[in-house]
Image (cartoon, rainbow, N blue to C red; front, side, top):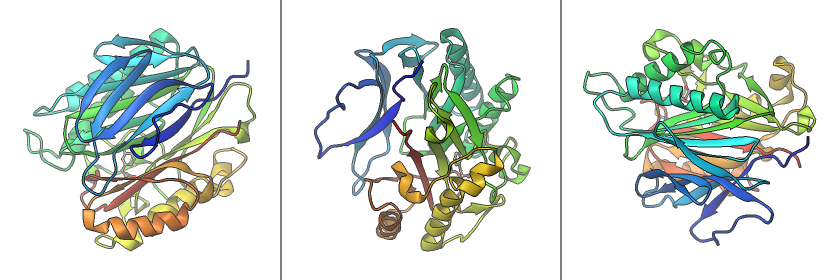
Length: 337
Ligand code: 3EB
C-alpha cells in the first residue's frame, strides 16, 4: 500500500505555527531555552531540549504524516504512532553516571518498537547535557553514555547490525533527551561513508565502547521506488578515518564536514552499499548546525549559507562529543512525493 511519507519541518518563532495542509503532527522537538517533557499533547508526543541561547534562534521541528496519530507512554517514554510511523521521546534525568539508564532507555525503546510493531528504527537523536564533563567516576559523560547505548544494541542480536543514523551532541542541560523514529513497512538501509571508519568500529582510544550509529540511513516508504526514498544524514564532523582533522581551525573543519556529507550522499558512496541514486548538498534540508564556540557562528553561517543556499538552517551553540570538534552538521534529503 502506498502511504504518505513522514516529513519534517522547522517552525521558527518569526513564522506562524502552522501544520501543512492534510498533514498531522506525530512528534515535536522544541529547541528552546529549557528542558521540558517528554509529554503528550493531543495525539502528539513532544519534548523540549535546552539548545537555544542568545544569537541562536529557538525553533521547533515537527514530524508529520498523512494520518492522525495515537499517543501513549511506555516505561517513561512518550510516543505517538499512526500505523506506519512511530515517534518516541525519553529523558534521563541528570545523574552521576548514565550508562545504566541509557541502556534501559534504549531497551525500553526497542521493546516499544517490538510491541507496537514498528521494527525498523531509522533515526535517533541524543541530546546530552555536560557531554564533555566528567561523570561521578571521572569518565567523560559522552563515553559513559556510549557504554550503555552499545550494551543495549549488543543485547539485541537482531539490532546490533542495523544501527541507524544518529546524532549524539551536547545540550545546555536537562540530563539526556532521546528521540527515536521507526517505521513498520518502510525499507531501511544504513549507509557508511567510504572516507570514514564506521563509528561502531572506532578504536578504544575514543572510549571503552564505540558510538552506535551509521553515517546515514535511507528510508524507502512502502510502495515507493528506491531512489525516491529519504536519506537521513547523521551528525557529521571534521573526521576522516577515525581522526579529527583541522583541530583549532573552524573554517577548515566546516569545509571538511561539508565535504564528508557531499561524499556520503553521492552516487559513488551510495553505490558502495548497492544503492542507486545519489544527491548533492543542495538536496539537503532540515539542516541543524551545531557550533561549539559562539564566536565561530559568523564563519559557520557564511560557509553553510553558501553550501545550502535554498533552505533555512538552524544553528545551535552546544558542545560536541569530541573536545577537539568545533562544528557538526546534520540534515535530511526528503523523500520525493
Ligand atoms: C563522529 O563522527 C562525530 O554518538 O550518536 C556524530 C553523530 C557523532 C552521532 C553519536 C556522534 C554521534 O564520531 C560525533
